[in-house]
Length: 142
Figure (tube, helix red, strand yellow):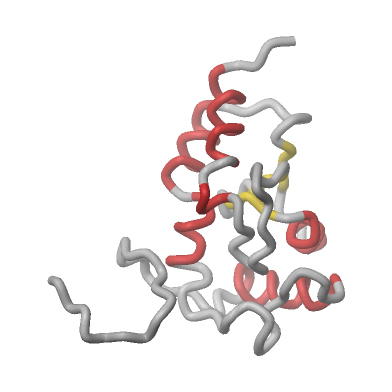
């Protein structure tokens, strides 16, 4: 069976660098993740997928699901970088203050997913700027 254009595109989106790192826990997958959380338009690792599904967030497989043009358009517009700029904007660093990292117990992941997506604990408005690794505020190029 050949892939539809939407299915081809979603597989390419999965391989974009921003989508190869799970927004929630920082797990990296060189060739992208095989699952998308549809409600939040993010590519997620298996532990985060389990956590989303535990609270009834719909997840779809890249390979076992059919994809619509609308779903793919939303993934293009959003994806993991968008989640980092909004849902996780004010989240603690990975592995601290309850934010999971690879190897943590699944319950750590579940608690974090509930805090992030159900309670909007770390939510911030999207300013369109990428996350920066340093805290240098001297770079005001506006």
